[in-house]
Length: 476
Image 1: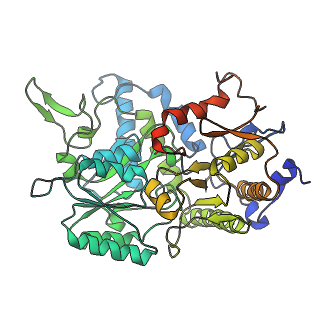
Image 2: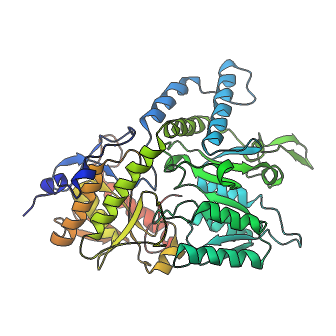
Image 3: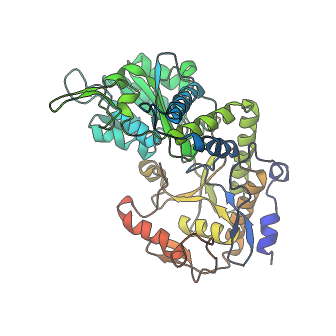
């Protein structure tokens, strides 16, 4: 029988398996234990959930930490330095996504935060009802729930093809006076997308603005508000190789200047009285409290590193890895790759698949425990889409980025093949809804404080989040 060590060294596609990472990331040399007693390099194929920090980002954070102090209202020298760092980072983040001269960049926590902020700024309909927002059922919950909560959302089911979906959008936009069309730049489930130029044209022709959920697009493709004509873009640092707690909403100023302040607190106000408050305009209007200076600097550093890459090299790297995933997984009996629009072009490096007759959580637990591979299982905060596609029980998602190597992709394909053909070598059981290794022999990192808790941590999370459904979801 082929050993686990041999399986981890096999290559699913020799030409792609030799592909190196495009940029160095923190943790690429981290070893993790597997159940047979070995330690293997961790293969992080869960980049779509949270990407590792670029080495350049970590270095930049180390550089600026000694300079950190209060911002905007401090007279001290380091306060002035920190303010300059923060505002320079804001400008760089806006430039990275092609902000127009009149656009504003609001530093947020992540994409979810950004879209909730914008939801409070959509002007009401002239009849006094909430401003109407059109959204597709393919969206991540971050680009669905904020609009539903405003009471003005219409959720349109996506079509079986790109052409059918565009036709549905055109028809629906003509039915009502929509203020906004909210659309993903790339699906967090399949990496597929609608042609953005066509989507923007349809919306603008109907008098609606467009906000782009750029969480999965911005880290993988060049994007420009100015060039596409989109009105707003939201994205996350933790998906853009800067996991230090900052994200951004970038776009047209008028709604953001007049909208409901995202948080009520210091820094967002001009004058406070006991009976009335005068609010700042954007971006300060939506950045109450002490801002995440280090997070903003980290995100700006990631933007610089990604902007310095040759776009053709970035595209070729990701396309090759994605093709190896799709081709390799599709060649395994019983494995099905999920698609939303078969006619979609140029998807980003996100691939979701299922193994017929096998629980996605078990497959993911096996990949981790026996091969040191990190993937995501569940419904990926896209419950309506997974339900429509017939995956109520969830699926498995592998995703790549600039720090991914071809060898890691090959390891995954070979490991899934081994699972299908030979089955697991360890015993697994469901504990409070989570697949775990029975009598798991893997140690936890020294000094982590997790001794005795490792086997129950995930189960505890699931117990707390039981209302979310039968499978865990990833972070927004």
